[in-house]
Length: 241
Image (cartoon, rainbow, N blue to C red):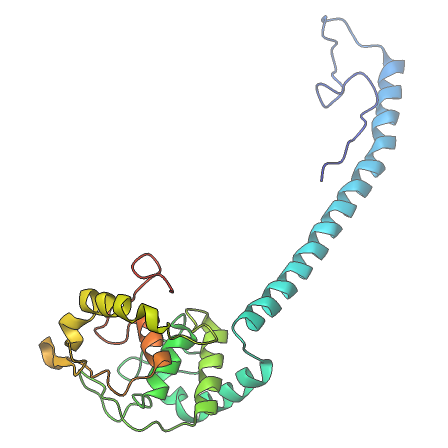
């Protein structure tokens, strides 16, 4: 949006009334007074136009912020009720290690800011979190939280710090894509998890876990978040399909 401002008088190119004319002669007093009155009469118009422009920008900014917040929540399928319930669960079961504001606590647990709902879902749904003890490897165990509570915790973590989230819908390809999936697995995953998905030990006491008990959603979440020694697979490495 551009406002046309009409500057009255002969001094518009300079932006001010010169004390000496361009030719070097003294400027006439009467025209100078006329030009001053013209500038003053135009000032309220310019200020009014500027105030209208600033007001419009502020209103547009507020509307955009409200729209962006609501649209991101809708796209992830997260409700405010889920986030509120997840916050209560977090304060009861996670705050001791990960801090009041997800900032992490040294020697206790890492920061969860920016890890996304995918990371929280993977860790909680596989029973790795809450952690039973410090060590190089967190083994899969029976989940402490129900599927609904797991979704709520993931919603809270994702809402607080952003980060990758698992897309909704069916994550499994059709029968025609099984061969393609096998090729991708052999190229990207088999070196750690093995051709039979049983997993294998890694260096420094770490381990690539078995995938036999993993669900589609847990596999997808792990690829997005890169737990422990696993790399993160971005869209540049593997497309969503």
